[in-house]
Structures are given as C-alpha cells and as structure tokens.
Image 1 (tube, rainbow, N blue to C red):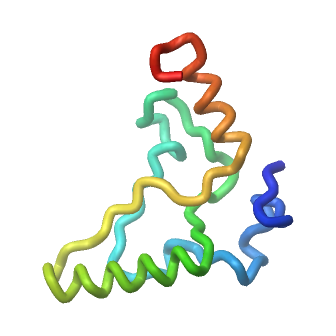
Image 2: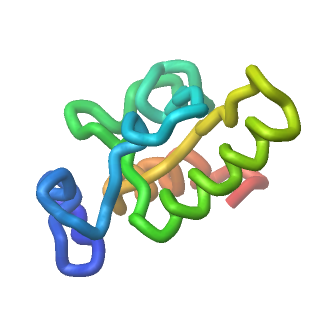
Length: 102
C-alpha cells in the first residue's frame, strides 16, 4: 500500500484532494506503466487505477487544455503518466539496477 499525503493510494478515489483524469475534457490517456508497452514489459499499475492527479495539477492541466483548444482546435493533450504509487516507482528503480541508467 502506498501513501500519498496520508492517503493510501488505493483509497484515493474518496479524497477531495485528487481528480480522476476522465473528468478532464480534451485529453487522451495512455498510461504506459499500466500496460506491457513500457521498458519493464509488464503492467505495473494493476489492479490500481493510476489515472489521478492532485486537484491543483488537474486544474493547471485543464487550463493548458483550454489554451490548446484555442490554439489548435481538435487537438488533445496526451497524458502518459499520472499518479505513481511508491511500489511502482520502486519496481522501476529495481528494473534499472545494474544498468548505466541507475
């Protein structure tokens, strides 16, 4: 269990401090660490839904998406990562052990 600001990441959906990405119009979501299409080669997020942002980050993203819509109608912002539990971050670090990237 990961803890974010005193909130277990598995309980994030009940926190007013976080917003789900699906509530933001004008974005496309492709969380690569939730699929096998990443450098580790496996889904690191399941069964947890990691498509969450802190409410301040979500508000800033909404403003950026509104700006993008005004500049390039029909374009969407592509979100490749969002909330990342500590257990997932540790798995990423572990995957880099013994490489020149660590």
